[in-house]
Each structure stands twice: as C-alpha cells, then as structure tokens.
Image: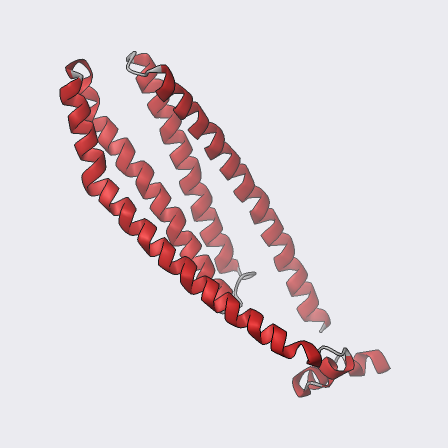
Length: 193
C-alpha cells in the first residue's frame, strides 16, 4: 500500500520521510540537542570521576582516621573500630559501584544502546549495590543498638538511611520496569519499520 511505501527503509535513508513530515526544518534544533547531550554526558562523567576520587579519599583516609579517633575518645567502644572501618569502606564501595554503573549507562546513551540488554546488567548491579548499602546500614544500626553505642541522633540517621536506601531500591526497580517496557516498544517498532 501507499503507507508502506512511504515508511520503507529507502524513504527513511533518503530523507524523504523527514521532508514528508516537515521535520527537516527542525534538523538544526535536533543537531543542537545532540551536541548538548554529548556535553551533558562529558560533564556528568567528569563529576563522576571527581566523586569517585573523593570517595577513595574517604575510604583510605577519612574513615580509618575517624574510627581510630572515636576508639581513642570512647575506649569502651574500641572493639567497634575495625567493624566500623569495614562497614564504612564497604558502604562507600557500594556508592562507587553505583557511580560506575551510571558511567556505563552514560556510555550506552552515547552509542544509542540505552535499550539493549547490556543496560539491564548495569541497572541490576546498581540495584544490588543500593540494597547491600541499605543492609549495611540496618546491620550497623542493629550492632550499635545491641552494644548500646548508638546515640539518638545516630539511630535517627541510620533509620533515615534505611528509608532512603529502600526508596532508592524501589525506584530502581520501577525504572528497570520502565526500561524493560521501553526496550520492548523499541523492538516492536523496529519490526514494524
């Protein structure tokens, strides 16, 4: 039929479809959008590098120094120094894993692979890291409460961390579902076109 001929791949490659839909007047705007997208990706990657660097500084210097200072200040809780370091470093590692996943997803955006199966792998890894970080906070709160080492402010911060972690986990599950639907729609559309 005439509609099938209009939407054939030959028409798309030759640009007639764009002229037919009057989109050719929007090409400069679309080109600017692509440039802005590349700029945004580069800026985001630079910020991710800075964040990962700062988190490494926290892992190597800040967390051990803080745990050591707290153990000296409160000798009755000195046995929590090493577990505190392990939990703190692991928590920061979870944040770094999520940042690496975001980096990889940004790479997929750059090559139009956002709806590929590779995207699901990175979303699943990020989800696992967020869940692990939330479980670390919950375990830490349990240990601190059992040892009577948690001040009310620390308990409230831990509870807030658990709620935020659970919320982020649920948000990632919803976004993963949306990605699955969008991926299916793209596959269906590629079969039609």
